[in-house]
Image 1 (cartoon, one colour):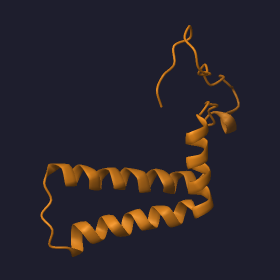
Image 2: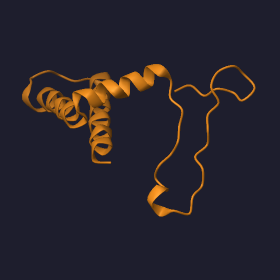
Image 3: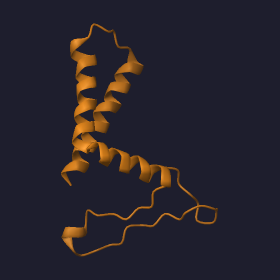
Image 4: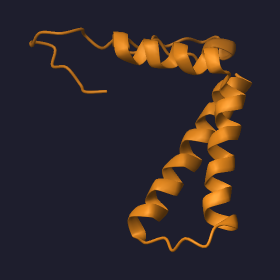
Length: 94
């Protein structure tokens, strides 16, 4: 997400409100673009755990079951897949 300046055009970013209620302390209000909202809805409709499992399977297959040589760029791509599936698992758990 690109940051918008307060004086420029575009939506203003809201800062999360401080709360003394511990239950709501981890909840943040953020504004997302329409494209980001559609992407999150698509992920939810597919099932967060299912998408996370698919990313993990492709990662593990590529890394452990193939004879493909990975250079730095491919290793970074595999790491990005790992970051994504772990984030999806956390989202599904919340």
